[in-house]
Image 1: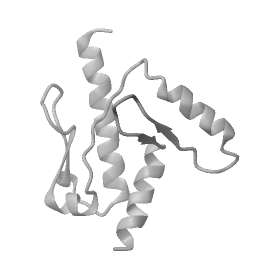
Image 2 (image 1 turned 120 degrees about the horizontal axis):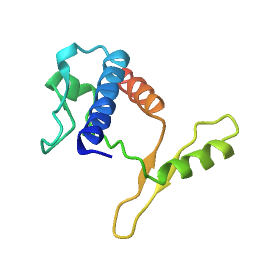
Image 3 (image 1 turned 30 degrees about the horizontal axis):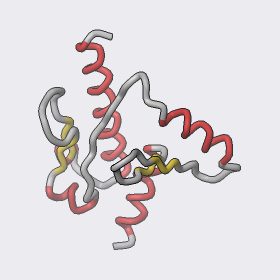
Image 4 (image 1 turned 90 degrees about the vertical axis):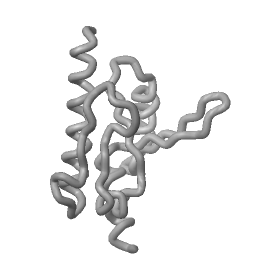
Length: 115
């Protein structure tokens, strides 16, 4: 894949996440900004208002070969109507949780409403 195609895939994912956040939370369009490809730091910049609602830092990766999807498909097959969650851990690294993006933002939204 050409570098320009890879960057386009990443840009598309960043914009999708940005749009999902704006749809799920009561934020202005300029509260969540997608950063240009190649710029170091967070992929999505949050305004102070957005940061109060979402105290997280987001890194978006859109790649062809990530085996996490295989694990997630297995979890979906075993979920029996519940939300599939994958917990992964690599040597000398902290465990990570993988969930569906829409489920994650709905969870954060419900959590922020209880504050």
